Image (cartoon, rainbow, N blue to C red; front, side, top):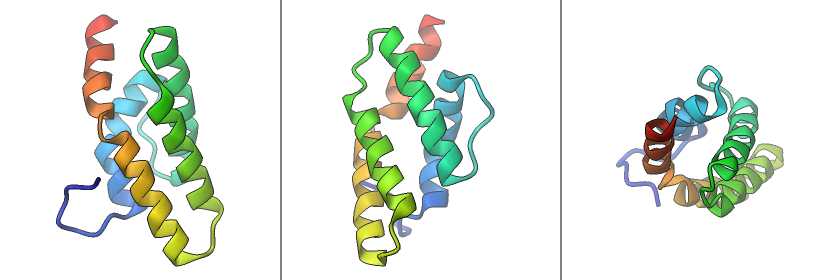
Length: 101
């Protein structure tokens, strides 16, 4: 769940996790939802090769993909919050991954 006092937006979700995900994906940090989705997919593959559990990350990709294609604002808010919940641990595993490489 998002712990910030500001409303969750795609931009602040991306800024919260972009650096860690970009490191694992071996790319520059994403700035758009579609680029972030692509990097999350690549990061999930790389995490998987390093034997990390990627279920939450893959779930976040699904929620963000659905978010990106939805036009219903209520649905988009729910999907974004679900993705944020699943990404809550990403900073920790990105740090572990960084220590491994």
